[in-house]
Length: 225
Image 1 (cartoon, rainbow, N blue to C red):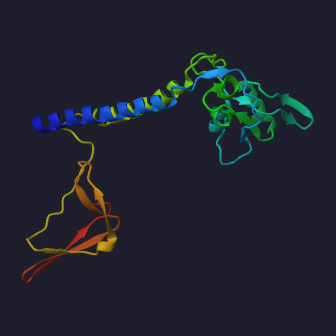
Image 2 (cartoon, rainbow, N blue to C red; image 1 turned 45 degrees about the vertical axis):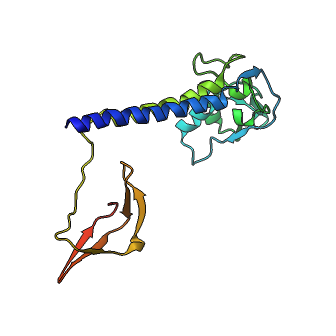
Image 3 (tube, one colour; image 1 turned 90 degrees about the horizontal axis):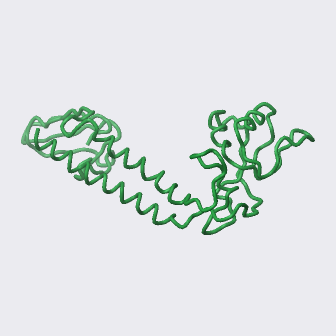
């Protein structure tokens, strides 16, 4: 309908502005985070182990590539990688092949600085594949990297149009007027997607409708309002 299409346009505009406001707030908070030094001299790092069965190999590779080692890596008495060495795919494959010890990598979380960040703790820049340059506004990049997917997620919700909806709903109507009785312990208050107050049942709920001498029992399926 014309009303439904118009309502979809308004919802898109309102929610998109909310997502844009989130991006602005994120950038405002972290805009001062800039790469100002080459090395902060920290000895701390985050430990990542290739022998950890909880971490798939693909995630292990993505975690290490582009980072900088916080400690030397030994295979027995042989040093296969040194501290402050940036990690590429070849070095990651050596770690996997030799089943090396837990690997300590430098991250922005372990940088000694309070209001800036160093090159070695940040690691490689995804734009050119080398260590990040001095003066790079990495805080603004991080804020935009978080806010932009939020805006895209908001817009994707409305790509089906203002009239068509992707889900189906089944209405259970009362057979007659009367007083509704149900177990209030099986429901909890919530709100619909339009912001209206409602009650949500997590399991099967039997509702009794009493009107004069007639009583009706209605079964409400789980996750219903």
